[in-house]
Image (tube, rainbow, N blue to C red):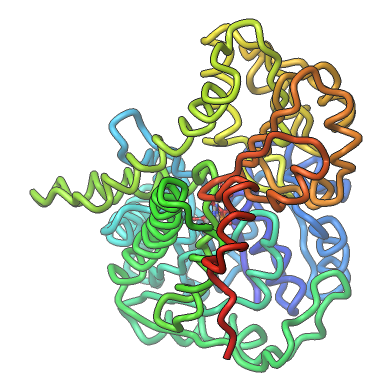
Length: 479
Ligand code: UGA
């Protein structure tokens, strides 16, 4: 089939690459000429493992090209995806101006030669499907007033559930595909488009292996409004699950329980599930905060105050502050101290800094008079460019970061941090304090390396050892 994808951010580029890889002919359109030039030269504009390789493979299979003009590709396409940004406005509402421009331009590009499906893949407030339909109609009426009755199209919502850092696997092997549409013709075209993914009939690319046993992906069809709501509800639930893990971890820390053990213990209940229960220093990224704000805003428009969603935001803000408290407990005075941040990106395998806990922590520390150093394998350039106001000293390695630092804080759980020579790092520091914001190390290993260690929701080494000796440690009973 022939598809056009508008917007070459995370969602647009990955969607375009994956659809072309499974055999469709795809054009990705963006008004940003620099981005399009880079994509044409084979360079990905976002950091995502294996994306550049997949774009090359996609070009060789279904075929993919990059354009700044929408009219030509849209006129030739059966499916036109809108995957533009919907950044938050100060009120928490989503800014729909890019979406509105895209919808009108699609209308202007349409003619009566075929039925087309306009698919909303951007995360948009509930009810935006209707808005898109109205704007496409306006675009048609402005461009071809005489032909508008002969131009046929449908509108669908196809929310995206990919995670940055594993976007390709999430797109090629999704847990589910959700399509909301009000007419059978649109649903039929969308089913056909996604058939290779549903049947998993394509050869897995070597860099993105297919999960063992995956032979079919559920395609769930709903109304437009339910599909839009599914996206918000999924993100709100995931953020709430992490927030819950953080709340329990904070209680664990006080009563002397090990949060990772508690999370394993509850996650084994299939009703709860073990994923997204890792306590840490709060979630970040471009989606959870924005989407919860937007859902709260929508609820308020209907006179409903969602206390659970608001609490989810509040506990996350408090969790980021936890690191500062832990540093104060260990160092008392932070003014004049040197704090080294291991990691800046909001999560591993991305250079994305949007709503990253690292930025919040650096801001607070600098405001309190501390000196802040940072090392991140990928995100340092992005941080230099995006936050020149933050007087961070960027380091070439974890060793450089540790040199003369008073404390290290693990902010992002990059794979390379898991195998660091902890004793070597401790030996370079002025004071050997390690705040492990991602529970990357065991308290025992950190203590053996000479660190005064504190994690999230964990007992100190001594208390762990004492309890174990007394036979009180959880996990001793085995069936
Ligand atoms: C999230 C959702 O997981 C995707 O399904 C969704 O498509 C996407 O938002 C979106 O709406 O675009 P993403 O923001 O890329 O994906 O990243 P996640 O892997 O969900 O991580 C979000 C944050 O939660 C990170 O800061 C991560 O460190 C944190 N996290 C995650 C935890 O603190 N604990 C966990 O157990 C899991």
